[in-house]
Length: 200
Image (cartoon, rainbow, N blue to C red; front, side):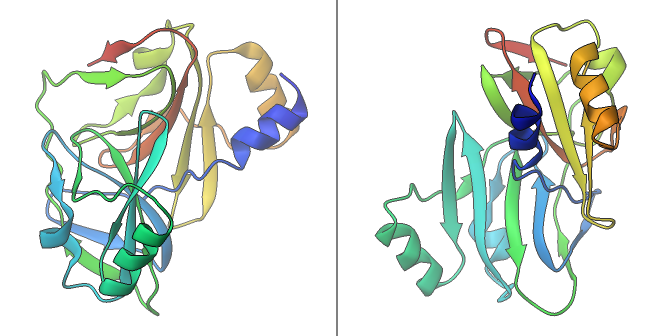
């Protein structure tokens, strides 16, 4: 893989915030949170927070948006984007806190122990749910998984995992932080170069 391709992967919008059962910190700026094994109603979850204008989701290679006020709703219509009202289960979602301070919200993020997650071909924006994910144990034998990206909102630092030696070497030479776990409640980007599959 060329350095240009790695740079493209690095520039992907991969922001993650830690989500625990109940209270969740939404940091100033962009955050990526994860749903659990049930969908999230965006209006009932975010309508009371004036500093959150948009929620972005990514399904089947397409960005979709939720407008949290009349202005953002109109901008979504004007931009010919698909409007959404829910975040699907086991998915990551991107929100922007425009305020001057962090926000605490209540967000249930449970995941059943036997919950299976569908992985589509190409990019997937997934949630770790309520379980910490050991990346080597979960993905180490899956040659179709090219790379996984995480982002820690608190430190604003990127993290990446790959079981491809060429990518790992390239990440080392570019001083990219390597990760081996996805924390519970976090979201992550996964690039699947194979066919559709499931993980548990």
